[in-house]
Each structure stands twice: as structure tokens, then as C-alpha cells.
Amino acid sequence: MSNSDTHDTSILTDDQVTFYGANGYLVVPSLFTVSACREIVGSAIRLHGLGSVAGCFEAVEESEADGDILKVYPRMMHPHRIDDVFMKHLKHPGVSRIVQALLDQEAVGIQSMFYWKPPGAMGQAFHQDSFFVQGEPDTCIAAWTALEETDEDNGGLIVVEGTQEADLLEMRPIDSDKYFSTEAVSPPVGAIQTTVRLKAGDTLFFGGHLIHGSEPNNSTDRFRQSLICHYVASNTETMSESYKPTVPLE
Ligand SMILES: O=C(O)CCC(=O)C(=O)O
Image 1 (cartoon, protein in one colour):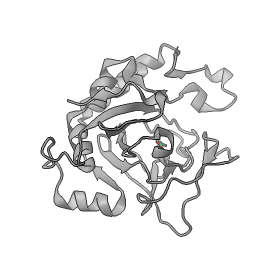
Image 2 (cartoon, rainbow, N blue to C red):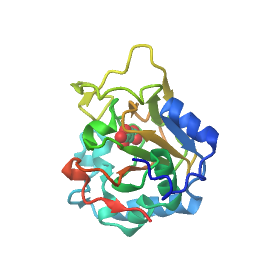
Image 3 (cartoon, helix red, strand yellow):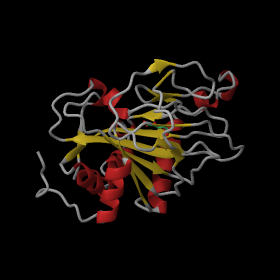
């Protein structure tokens, strides 16, 4: 049921809403200020300095990493549960308003993640977020914010155009040293794969059925730090337990 009298759709232009409907994703430039990006990275550096945080990440020294730089710089899962800065940005007012405008419903936050993606890091194979969230109703939407410039060279996010209405596809085992994930979906033959180029502070929104992933960071000296948050409609009745507790948006 639409709740359009309780949220603000004026944050997006008609063209933006039309683009999202047609393509399943939308880039909103400069949603985060430079100082917000720095604040998030600063919190990540502080947490990383702890070495490990149960349920969030576990890092090892480079000498113990067997050549896998992601073991030294693992992604952080749900850092908002342990850090106020991440909690604040999961509830970022601009992101919240856009998510609710795109969903045309009130929403709650269900996940934050921080990716370092240093030079040489593996990518993440193609998948659909709703497969993991298992929401009923199925309304997952992602807000993927670049904390520094990202493109083909440093393993930017790739979206598969036109898959926003696709069914949830079977995840099949893969065996590739290009990806840290071990299962993937196969995108439809001939579908266009677009690497979304973003500047620091730009946010990419996409729905839970859109097939997406990333290639390795092939640069020699550029990290690809990003904040990735997921949301669902607040009337969601069931979802995978790992996304609870949900976070009300202000
Ligand atoms: O940032 C990436 O490389 C992949 C992130 C992603 O696909 C996700 O969070 O679902």
C-alpha cells in the first residue's frame, strides 16, 4: 500500500524517478559532503585499528594474508551496530528521503557495510541483494555511496541494465580468483553491463533484483572505499534474521 502522504517525493525530479523506473538504478551526485566522506573513512580507520570486532570484521597482518589483501582490509559488516558515525549515516536524511521516495513507502535501515577494496583486491561476483534479504514483501533497496572516486580501474560497481524486474535467479558455485564470493548468478545473455563511475559523495541507488557486482581493483595505488547501506519498507513482515534489528529512519 502506498504511503505517499507520509513521505517527501520532492527530493527527486520526475526525470530521476523515470530513470530509476526504466533502468533500476539512479545516481544522485554529491549527496554526501566531503567532510561526511572523511568522517566515515575516519571511523573505518579507527575500527580497523582494533584488529577485529566480533560480527563486523577480522583483519590479519599482511604477513599472514597469503597474498590476499582483503584479509588485511576485510569489509565491515553492520558497523552501525558498534559505531555512532555509521549509525548516523545509515540514517542519512538525504538517503532516507530518496529511498522512501523510490519505494513510495516508509522505510527502515537493515544493513550498513564498509568496503576498503584496496589495490589488487578481488571483486564480488554478480548477485541480487533480495536473494539474501528474503524480505516479504520484497522491497530491498541499496544506497551505495562512493567515498572516493570509482571507475573501471579500481573495481567500480557494475550494474546489469534492465534486470530490475528479473526473478531471483539461482546462485551457482563459481571458482574464480577474480571474486571473493563463491556463488553467482548468470546475467541474461546480451544484457548490457555498465560500470557506474562515481565521485566521492555520489550515491548509487538500486533495487534488490538488479543484478550487480564488481571486478577486481586493478589499479596499483587507488583504494575504492565505499559505504553500502540497505533498506526495506517498514511494513516488511519477514526477512532474514541477520538484518535485524532494523533501524528506524528519521
Ligand atoms: O561494492 C562491491 O564491489 C559489491 C557490493 C555489493 O554488491 C553489495 O553490497 O551487494
